[in-house]
Amino acid sequence: METFVFLFSFSALGILYAMNSIPAFQEPYVILEIGVAVLVVVLLFYFLITRGNPPKDVLFFVFAVFSFTCVIDLVSALEYDGIISGFMTFYQKTGEPYLGTPYAIMMCYWDGIVHFIMYLVMISRITDRKGYRSLGLIWAGSLCANMSVFIAGIVAGKYGSEIRPAFWINFLFLLMPVWGAITLFTRPKDRPLIGGYNAQQAQSMKLIWRPTDLILVVLLIAAMAFTAIRGLVALDSPLEACLIYVKHYEPYLKDPVGYPKVMMLHLFFYGLPLLGAFVYGLLKPGCTWMSDWTLFLAGAMIQCQWAHIGGSLHPRTTAQFRIPNGVFWSVLVANLLYAVTPILVALRVSNNPYFFLKIAPFPGQTGLPNSEEKDTKIKDK
Image 1 (tube, helix red, strand yellow):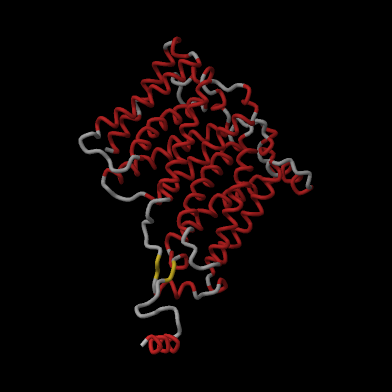
Image 2 (cartoon, one colour):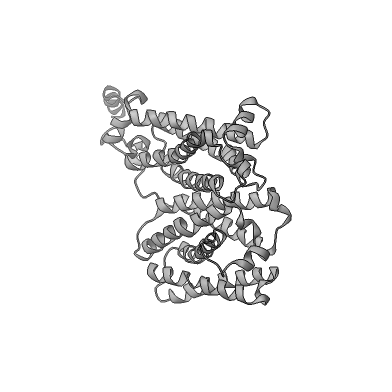
């Protein structure tokens, strides 16, 4: 099935080429109507071909339809970068002109490559009746961050006065990952939440004797500071540290296109509390929620940082908003380390989960010391 989805998704090229060649299809409202119609037809197509052996997971249809749109995003990015031509010229003018911004181009590359691969893997696992919950949470975090920053950035940035009818389709791509995230969070975990002797041993160790966790706590605290200062910059804080940072390190945060500012506010109000919660989870044993939320934030953070770093380095970005040459490598390394930190935490939780499990009582254990347990039994008799 995944091979079929892969091949069928590229039929989007034919639709784009036809629309680019027929002027009647290039009117703003016609673009919206065709976009909605294509999504409905693709959904019905997958529904009909799976009718004999319907997938047990309804998210199959979401992944199948979204894989179709991934090809459109990839074509958009490639055409804006001048690698291909003849497919999206009309859409650049009367569809969504903000897709030509550096941030949106990098976002489209991510959707067209990374999300597309995720969809194929998850479709394959659904078809084989296998679980995909962990990968699904990464996808949900990534696409939720992707679309929430994208939509808010359009409205809040300089393209807020150039919204065309096709803009409203984007809300579908925001609501679906939100619904998918809720669905995945409420499903049973792939691993048990209860641990025994190994969990008890792991949770008895202080942080000082867990060097990996100690390093991760330091990285998380540094990430929290990094998030805070960039969030304050986005809020136009008059603090001297914020003024120095935006002037000498990341002037891209002031790009009038709006995406960098919106992204920093997202991370400030949503990412910062989660980073702090992860510090708590590494200090306090038995935080079973760590396995899910670390994956979700890792997906969101890596997507945001990919678009942010790529956008700040893209040739379309005005020279005054690019990273200054004198601090180029230090800013780049800081951003890369910031992106990797949640991934490292997620890997640590996934690979060695004992510290984050609830401890099950051993056979015959009631939580009372042996002497008290015996006395209780005697009194009961």
